[in-house]
Structures are given as structure tokens and as C-alpha cells.
Image 1 (cartoon, rainbow, N blue to C red):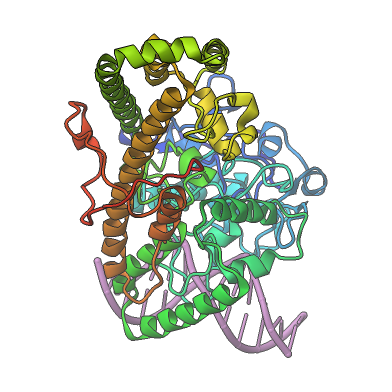
Image 2 (cartoon, rainbow, N blue to C red):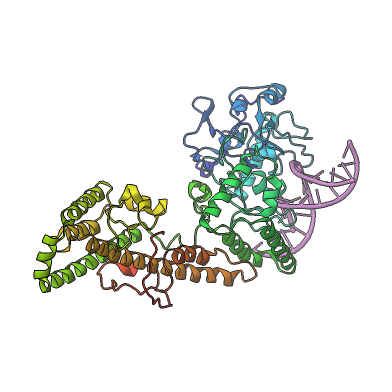
Length: 553
DNA sequence: GAGTTTGAAACT
DNA sequence: CAGTTTCAAACTC
């Protein structure tokens, strides 16, 4: 059989213009399917042997090298007999994710010199194949080179990996239980019509990746949340694919959006797919592509935490998979900062107002205050409590006794959240205990003020601050809801036949309404000169109410 | 293992 | 660029 010690027959007369042709066999055509390794290699003419390429990005190399390149490092570095090579090359799983031998082509008419041939396409010589009239070998290097040249002429990217590079996409597919699949993206996208992209006819499916918006497939079921796809891998619990899927399930459930469907919802989806499929038969595939994408987007757009979106940084395919939340572009880190500033300033103002009011009241009742302080035996104790509370508040970096009943005695702090009249959720506690801001310094200052040192006053200050902060935060959430709703409507208009993409409204509204009753008067904090304009467009609806606020957020 | 189906590649 | 043909893998029986 052909020995691939080196590309001995590389023609020296490579046209100069091709010298910078870049080629990258770092991933095989079928996701590493037909080769044993994905280590990128290049033939080094100076050393007359194959060298691994680091990083995997394409390196300029001559066409002659290209025509002889192989991704199979074992194969390239030293000659091997077909048998020995097969024995040492557990590669791509053909069906169940278990390692198998390299697939040998069975080409009959292409002479293994066209991309039909997997060996040729993935840059390896045929070795132990069942092909007939094979020219994909050292003996026919000249012919092979010409074929490569012709193909590159037609499509300079013909030999580039079809699956966008990523740490996982480039991996050796030998052990699927170790690294999660679903990472990567088909650079060209598939064009499947009948397979639902759930058979190995589909290159995306074969490469164990989800179809992306690059694809122009019809009736695609190879998307995250697809019931059919889930069913396909159900039962294969050892499959990393399955595990990844279930992980994504949980992630989606966490957001409260029904993106990954329950069995009933799956049926619904199925029907939609059928509907979609039906319509697709009536229309050219191309016209459906946006709808497919919208549908996919609708299914996927809240799965931003999934590495698919973030980790795919293909040097070849710079177009990343962008399964993003509808709010992905809306909420920026600076927005969170701005919101915090607004809340802090607002809270401060509330505290100041109350303090001023107290000063005024105190001035009016000076005599009463004095006699009150003398007559009240508990005043010292209460002041101690107040001081203690301040200290504790400092220690736990928050000082807001949100759980504290407004008119009851103090005594609750971070560590005693449940002792108060209301119990804060762990999330709220964490949130509060993680925050350090000046709201509380202000309120503590007020609390330490002799004229407002009574527990009741302190509680009132806190309560007022809490109320104002929650109202404002709720308002912000509602803005987000509205903004997301608009975006959602935009998507829905694109794919009017499909289910609402995000259900963000319910998700966020759930948060908002669970936290604060709908009837809350908007705090008068808009005047704060902070970059409020960065927030999403204002909510159309007015919120009026009694200001009853729960602590749980 | 033969026949069919499928979709990418090649061609027009 | 769209439609058609060729091709070989995937799949079915």
C-alpha cells in the first residue's frame, strides 16, 4: 500500500501564486470522522517531515504541501501498513459514539480525487480502502496534485474544515464521554431536506453539532430543544451529547422559559415542524431559511449560558454561533452599575428626606423628646441595640434589615434573617450581604443620630429605603420586560407561525410581580442625574399603587 | 449484500 | 446563482 513517509512526488513547479494558499486540515470533513487525529500538521520541506502546527490556524504553505498534507499524524510521520494503521487508529464513531476504525472509502468513479472521497477530502492518502482505480496515493501524486489544484481553484476553502474550529470541534472524536459535543458550527451549513438533520446524512449531525443559521436545511430537528433530537439520544445516557442536553435542560428551566419542551410541548413542536415542513414543500427552501433561523432563534435565544455561543471562536469561521438572549444586547455591565448607582443615590435621598423630617419633628417636640429620653428606661438599651445593629450591619456589609418588621424592634441582621417578621430568600440575603454601599452608611448615620435613634425611626428609614429601592428595581425590570417584549414581537412577526420565542415577559414579570405587587407608585428618583437613559425604553404602562413591598426578590 | 435514500460535490 | 447530475455514504431490507 501507499507509504506516506513524505510527499516524495511533490512537484517543484508549483505556481508562485499558490504559494500562499492556506489550507487547514485540522478537522476532517466529518468532524474528525475519517482521521485519527486532529492535530494540525504541515509538511516541512526543510526537514522533510510532517510537523504539527501550533496554533491550528492555517499556515502558508505551498500547494504541493497542501496536496500531500494529512491530518493523520501517525500516518504522516511514518509509513504504516494499512493493517497496522488500522489497528492503531481508533477513530470516529460511526454510530453509537464508540471508537471505531478509520473509515475506508469505497469510491468507484471518482478515483478518490474528488471531495466525494472522504480520504481525499480529509487530506489523507487512501490506505486500505476498498476504492477502485484509486489515485489518492503517492504513486499518483502528480495527478493528485492536479486534482487538488483544480479543486482549490474552484473553491479555495474546499479543504478547510467544514466544522468551525473550536477547542471541541477540533478535538479527536474518540472519546465522546469526555468532552462535550455540540460545540462548533458548520461553516457552510447543511442543506438537508429529508433527514431532519438527525441522520448521518447531515454533516452537522455527523459532526455532532447543532445546525446553525448557516444551514439551509428544511424541517430541521437538529437544534437544541428538539424533542426528536432529545428522543434520539434518550437512553444513551453515557453519551456526552445526552448529558449536555440535559444540562441545557436544567439551564433553561432555571430561567423559567419553556424552551426545552415537555413531552406535550414536544408534540406541539412536532406539529409545528410538520406544519413547517408542509409549508416548506410549497416554498423554495431559501425563502424558509429566515423562518428556520427565527424558529431556531426562538428556541435557543435564552440559552446564552451554553458554551455553544461563547466558546466557538473559529479562526476560520469568524461567524460565531450566536444563540443569544433577547436581552443580550440590552443589559450591559454598565447598566448594572448605573442601576446600582441610581438605587444608592435614591436610597440616600430617601434617608436624607426622612432625616430632615425627623429633625423638623424633633425641633417641634424638643421638650417632649427630652422628657421622653429621661423617662424611658429602655432608651439606653435601645441605643445599644441600634449601635449593635450598626456594627453588625458593617460586619455583614449591608446593614439593611429588610427582614425586619417595620414597626417592631430591631435585632435582626444578616445572620438572623429569619428572626424578623419576614424571611428573606437566600438570594436576597446573598445579594444584600454582598453589597457594600453608602445607602446604609447614610441610614446608619441617621440611626445614630440622637434625634432619630429610636428603633422605630431606624426601622422606618430602612423600610422607606427598601421600598424605594425595590420600586425602582421593579421599574427597571418592567422596562426590561417591555424591551424584551418588543424584541420578541419582532421575532414573532418573522416567524408568526411559531410559538413565542422567549416568554421573557412571563419570566421577568414573574420576578417582578412576585417581588413587588403591581400597584406601586413610582419612586420620584428619575431626577437623579445618572445615565438612566441607558436603560431600556420606558414601560408604556403606569404603575400606581400602595407601595406594599415584599422583601423577596 | 443488494438496493434505496440522501445530500454534498460537481457540473451546466 | 439555480438547477441538474454525479457520487459515495448512510440506511433499509
